[in-house]
Image (cartoon, rainbow, N blue to C red; front, side):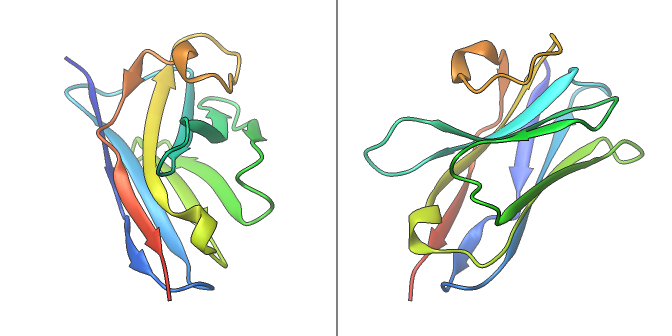
Length: 124
């Protein structure tokens, strides 16, 4: 069974940067679209960014607010989320997700495969 494995989370101070990574285990090639979602305490899971694996076309959600960059390295079969100038509202569990169709969807239910999440805590 395909699984996604996230890494790179941690506890940082406001203004710091983090780079999250996501890679599939079990097989190569995960889906046509991969995305990052964030679930903050007490809130619903929200779309941060998504990317079409082959073309590199991307879409950012409201939580991104110009401070994140989504990218992928096909040679490493790895998805990234670079987050700069982190703020406390960036705290949450960040999930990697994948889907087969080409639409970069913002709704979590559109994604069939999920990782376990990696915790990001931004606090002074």
